[in-house]
Length: 313
Ligand code: CP
Ligand code: NVA
Image (tube, rainbow, N blue to C red; front, side):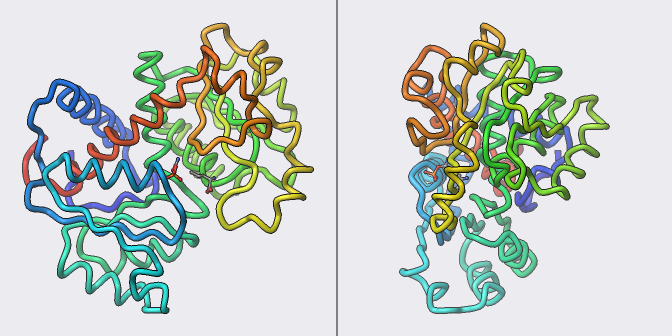
């Protein structure tokens, strides 16, 4: 498979085979890490990690993961770099490309990540933008596969804001052949362009990607219930109007009751208990959110190794 030296900006850019390869390599690397077997596929390499937004999971999993692969990660926040003082992204891309072997970025505008990738000569990995969160959604496919074995034909219901998480899940489900319903109120439904592209991908894998305002209708027979915060990073000023619009879009026991009995509950975290998910469901037997969080490490190691390693994995 040809992921070497490519960027990972959006799951929509990946082939069905490339998504499957990432999940397979993640499984192999997770097994090796648990068994204490060496897997230093990135020995001597360096990764720059650019963060314009906060992070617990993404920063830790990229940093620890790159180190476990034998490489050296460098953390650069806006305030600790010249990015915060306005150095153009195209200059940052060309300078870093002469010093490091890969760049991971978490920022606001998706276009600036595309610009970074255009000017960088090393692989660029999207660690979240306002539009997409591909590493999380690939991790989610891995987690569902780990818990339920088969992805194709299953039903994932996303509850709440049609945001970056919803968008990447739409692309991911379309690639693996999972049916997805995005249950969101008017005004908070996913970007029509992303929806159209995900539907085009879904037409090749034989699944459906739909949007539904009626939450209980959407959740009927779900294999996976998924939610994310009502207010994403950068949207804090809209908190009250978002709360008013989204307050019925919550994963709670009543919603679980209409899903399949073996339904699993996912959340990318951080969770806001009592808002998009209740405490009892988040901490209950259907929730796999902490396995999901751990899997960020394994899946991102697979992504970094596939894009950056000189070895055949
Ligand atoms: N899910 C996720 O990306 O978490 P962080 O914001 O903590 O990185
Ligand atoms: N939608 C959330 C995801 C956080 C991991 C945000 O962008 O803040």
